[in-house]
Image (cartoon, rainbow, N blue to C red; front, side):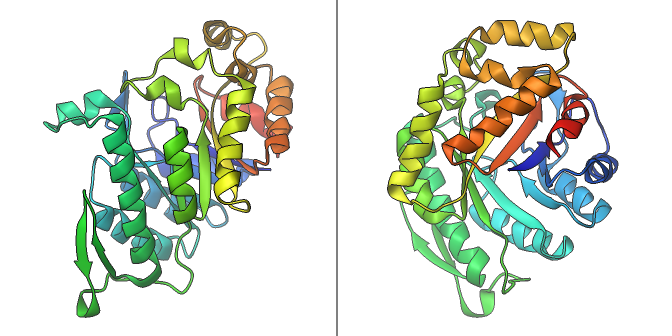
Length: 298
């Protein structure tokens, strides 16, 4: 199992220094999220943070978890991904997501699309990015994007080893349609909890193990051998009241098993291999959780 850890913007301010520490702890990779804010947490720009991480490390892979397709053009995303692949000397993995936080989009003066539109737009964007990462060129005409980049207009820094393209999806249609387009699918177990445009813990508490198994199966039915990851929110501490409070809010739901004492959380994470998952992206809900988990996982 590979473990990637997500930059904890709410408690750390220097992505480069943090990534250096995570490399020293032995993690396989680090992630930069693409938000303006989530609640009271303010985020650095995803591409700046990922570049800081790449420049501060030598071994670990770097990924975006996940660039928000509602924020920017897939052409800009591909251009940045190619540049980050060069800056990291081949260690970058290009994660692109559909986008889910309504308040960010509306604060920017944009209309927040309905779920079907977000998925359709996302699938088209992945198709565009796929071409651009491979060749620096793309001719595409869809309902949401029209791109004509060819010949002398090729994007810069195309590599014979382009960055892997990763999609994050949780709903049936998204899982089915993104799987053929990418190098890795990350299951978003909490997808139902963000469908309304914000994170709903009561819905998170209702997620079951069978539901997550079915998400993995949906991908496998379309593309049997594509690598599978999963996004997990975690909080670690045997007697930490913050961990206990979040775990209590999740009740007996499946996602609650990823909060608690370090050894218990590590066991729950290891059991994800039974679902055919070979990578976990860990976002900490309680500061310090990554470092507490490291001795039990790595």
